[in-house]
Image (cartoon, rainbow, N blue to C red; front, side, top):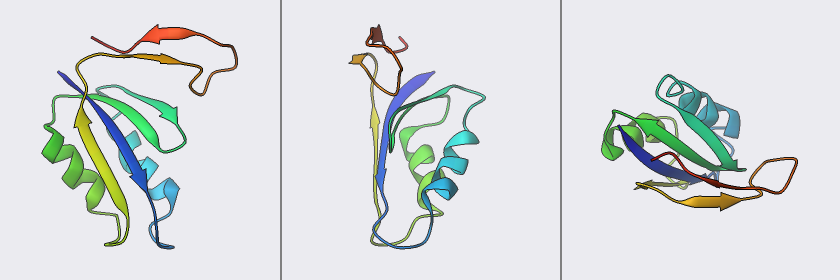
Amino acid sequence: MQQFIVCFDLAGKKPSVSEVEHRIDALKAAGTAKLLDRVWLIKSRMSGEQIYEHLNSVMGTADRLLVAESPSGTYRDLLTATPQVRKLWI
């Protein structure tokens, strides 16, 4: 399995954030984690291009989308109640 960082920014009124996050939720069988408001870590057997196409299919032409492979990393205080440092999946 590969790990990807997915970031998106919606410029238009459609789709809504929830529509894009619903598409991300569809990938949960492999593993997802919301790191920031519109930043996700996705662990998947899909390629980055497949994830891109999966999400891009509901996005408008003015919206922004980044899918980047991320084999490892660390984070701090991301959508958590208490300060912590954790390693991303490896």
